[in-house]
Image (cartoon, rainbow, N blue to C red; front, side, top):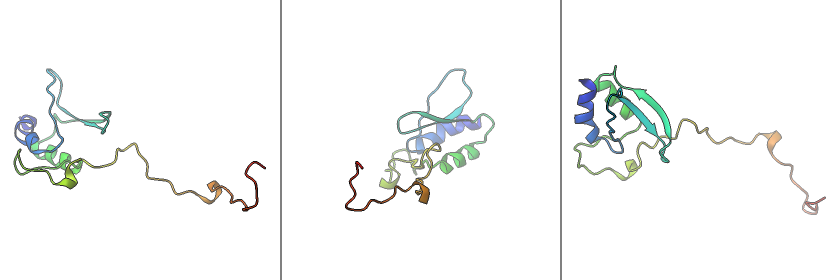
Length: 109
């Protein structure tokens, strides 16, 4: 009953959160990348409605006041969290920086 209340009453308030009904399947939140690649599946059966709402907001989904409320520009692509598979850019270390050439040195030599 908690998950059903979330589906019927809360999902319409979230931007970029869709419900797909699969007969006989346990309810789960499936997170997709911007390319629709599956990132993670989170089972919802044992969660309360409040826990699901908290999880969805922690994941970065924007909750509107009403289903027809406008979405602020900064949340248009929400959730805007980077995929967990991406690592932060690496700063080159001294041993990986290519040695500088003298201006007169020919690159083929």
